[in-house]
Length: 92
Image (cartoon, rainbow, N blue to C red; front, side):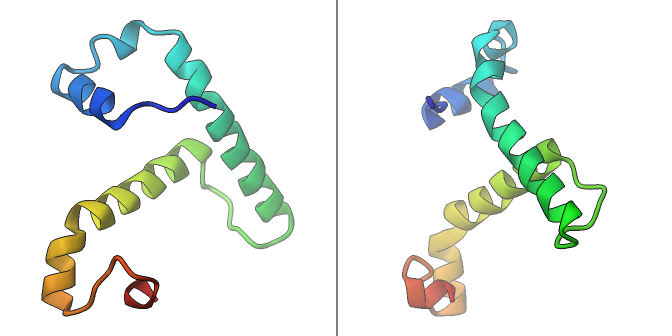
């Protein structure tokens, strides 16, 4: 499945998603991920592993936010916490 190039995403954010808003393809590219997350959430809810009230879009936003924060702050957090957060031992 093709993914959005990070540079394209950053450029579009600088220009209020002017081009992405016109694209029908962008929704097609994202829908398999949202559908998969929805199926995982439903399966987990049915098995009693997950609680209800979590939507696939919100979960996707949360995952992206956590990943972005960690990766964009990895050097400063490593310095402040005195551990290399880019190693397996550092993040465990």
